[in-house]
Image (cartoon, rainbow, N blue to C red; front, side):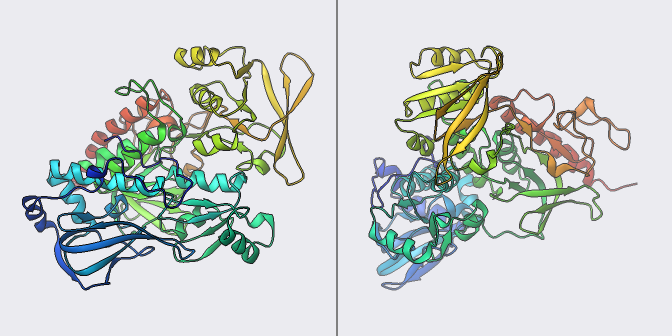
Length: 568
């Protein structure tokens, strides 16, 4: 299944194209519909009646038994654009209906319509029970989301210049999470200019975000826009999950897929987007099974869809502030940033690592406004024809440098050490050395960032580690890939042991309070496991993280089985 739900959006609202039309809108046979009846309930609609509406929770997947349903896109500005009509034998849904998310389009009956409504939980059951039919449906759901993204339709409208750092910040957030959206520039669009005149009292208010229900947000944070557009579905805070997975990088996603497919109830939390650092990789070429390479977003998007298919509850972006290991009620407590606690019988720490922030004055001021910790097509457009600086010497830095070299006039690659061989794969070194517009600057460090009149990044300063001289260059975009620190602050005080670097200790390296030896991926607290980059001693590779995510599920089954045994 090759569809990538994180494809960069097109610029036009009505840019619909269905190159794989038969796969995107398949027609079911009467026999297939008959097999689906046990998963749904009949529903009838009169002419003009709505089956689903933009911005409301979608009821599930509709199979059209007779009549025609007109599907259209409606944005918060009141623009309505027809998309497609669906008739008998076709079905109405996209990937969001696997987990009961908000509908991104409208569907109205044209004449009397008879349907079979399959709610989200039964849709997931159908996909698993009917393998061949389920594959066709799943492919169509993904391709429909791809079409919405590429058409720039079915989501919020961002109003602001594409060159504005905060516009790029929100675009990147939405794209990383596979959310359709489009951008209007007030310099060229009258409706956008009118809204800016009405709602934006200063440049700091931009971009404006017009939600599906017409609400206007002024330069919102990522969690604010996520809640406003319904990215986080309804979930029961009282539910006791078998497994809580904190982090949705490759390790966390692998845990979610394998655990949910084996019948465990799973909740996955991530503070930003699925995929972690790997999700920001422009191209991964040394991952098994992809000889031509695959983008980190495509790889993570497939895993994200798999996890939903098997019923994992994906809570993104939801940040875990702390972990309560007292288990006074027999469960671990996870305090979220939305102020409500979640409960689980076991916890998998997959929170990964974050790129380090160099000791540079005012660095935070420029983050998302010229300083980036990832390199996507959105940032690539910002850098078109410009000189950029990239700091770092690992594989992620190498992948980003090669990607940016296709957009920027020149990429200055700043490396503290004297070479790349100790931290980068040989194939990347050879590619960088063969790229004319990448300049390697060894034994060099970034020391200063300067702004222009509108507070955007305008100039950088660096110096050689072999001498005192400083140099400067007019640069508007800097990419930082400088080592990594474990994201383990939320574990403070819960009893989980970490090493000197803050990475979680597991297995033979730690003893538990009762004197028992922890299993290979278990921490010093029974029932808490760690996988991927956050784990002390892990190999810090995508393949290794995925392997640990699969491996930990056997340990989870063992722990949960022991916990269910009656005490003597």
